[in-house]
Image 1 (cartoon, rainbow, N blue to C red):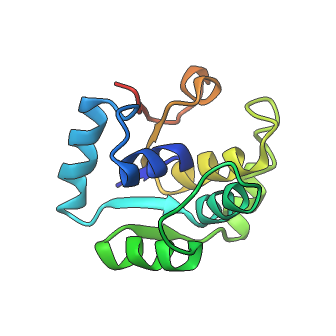
Image 2: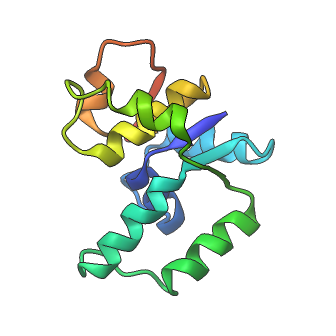
Length: 133
């Protein structure tokens, strides 16, 4: 399974050229096996970006989410295990949403597709793919 960071999800959805060819191919291949996922916190992050006017979606956020779920993306809920694990990553990132995303990937032993330089440089048992590659 792969987990998309929030920006990677947006790049994929928008067919943004920021998403590298290798990552795009990986996502397409994994999509065929229903093994592309996002942390539920990513939908919250997108809704906050919309609310603050930092991004625009073609439809309301709840419809956008439903469309992605209908298309086959898996949403992973934040449970107590993930929440507690995220509290241990204070040296990794100040952004709690990023810590939730990392904890989700770690808990599910999934590859995290991200362009976040702090996450990519982190020395841990987290498997990552640079979303720009």
